Structures are given as C-alpha cells and as structure tokens.
Amino acid sequence: MKIRLDKYLADMGIGTRSEVKKLIQKGQVFVNENAVKKPETKIDTETDVVFCQGKPVTYAEFEYFMLHKPSGVVSATEDKKDKTVLDLINSNRKDLFPVGRLDKDTEGLLLITNDGQLAHRLLSPSKHVDKVYFARIDGKVTDEDVQIFAKGLDIGDDKPTLPAKLVVLKSSDISEIELTIREGRFHQVKRMFHAVGKEVTYLKRLRMGTLILDENLPAGEFRELTKKEIEELC
Image (cartoon, rainbow, N blue to C red):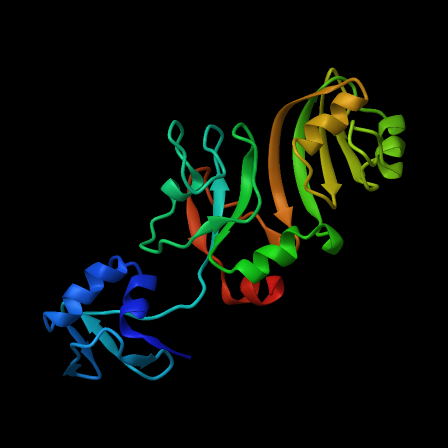
C-alpha cells in the first residue's frame, strides 16, 4: 500500500498532519536512509523503511487490542466527566475506538481497534454474533427462566429478544449464570432479567464472537491480539 509520508507518520501517532509536516520540512524524517522534505512523498508501507528523529517508524494499517474493562470506566472515545476505555490503552494512534460498548458498571472483554469494517461485521444485527456474559443475579434463577430465555422475551422494545442460552451455575438467593445472547440492545442483559422479576448485581463479558477474554489479563489492563485471534475474528 502506498500513502503520503505525512499521513504515514500521523497514522502512527507521531503528531498531527501539520506537526509531522514541520518535522519533514526540517529534514528530521528519513526514508531508506535518505532525508525527505516533501510531506506528499508516497511511501510503500510494505518495503520502505522510515525513521523520524532517528527512531524507526513501522506502519500498521490496523491495530487490535483486547481490554479487560474495569467497572467505572465508560466505553467511549472521550468523556468530559469520566475516564474512558481509550485512556487505558497505551497507544499513539488517534483513530482507535471501542467495538460496541459495555455499561459503566460492567466489566470484561472489550475490543479496541481502528478497523471499521471488522467492527461493522461484529456489531451488525444481521450477523448475530454471540456475546457471552457471566452475571450474579439477585433472585433464584430457575429452569423456567432458562426456558423463557430460550424462547426470547419481551423487554419493552418493538420486538422480543432473540432466543438466548441461559446456563444456571448456581441457583440461590444470589444466583450465578452464564448467558449467551446474539444481539446488543441497550442494557439488554439487565432488562432481560428485570423482565422475569430479578436484578443483575454484577456483569462481566467473557466472549465476543471467537474472541475470548484472556483469564490472565487483570481488570484495567490490555494486550495486543495474537495473529491467530485476528485471523479468527476477520
């Protein structure tokens, strides 16, 4: 792929387009050991070697991060009051965004990327991508609830939910469950349990599509996706 030198550097977080243009014009950028002073110079991202202020700058068109979202952080690119999930990602890229959202008090798996096409495939209602959650429920979850969830239920929207797979891990005054849904409606898991007279007290996403939350990744931490994880997602 061939792109302008100033875009190459800006995409990799070196600075804004105007900032990197100044660096280029000052002779601080080298391509294949030669100083280049024209921002519009075309760079082959596969073969050209770029240095900025003596440091190599390797180009990656897309980046993919797994974040173990903690409670208290909002799934947004920016927020005036609260810390966002992007504040937790140590990256110079300016085009990253969360794929979908988790409620502020919900924990677990969140994919952070700049790959818009992948995000669309994962979030498109027509794709019915599985999302798996662990939850603690205030109230005894029963086999009857399992059957109701399997049929889909009315949560106050125009249409009932799609059938969902509810697995009861512990049935007690405080129950523990695993739930697989194929939609991403607003507060969906909480609203589904509210519809059967129970309340979610803790919610954590474990999986989205083929991507599984790394059990060794502490809340608030992130890592790059492996090559295998990216291939399976894409």
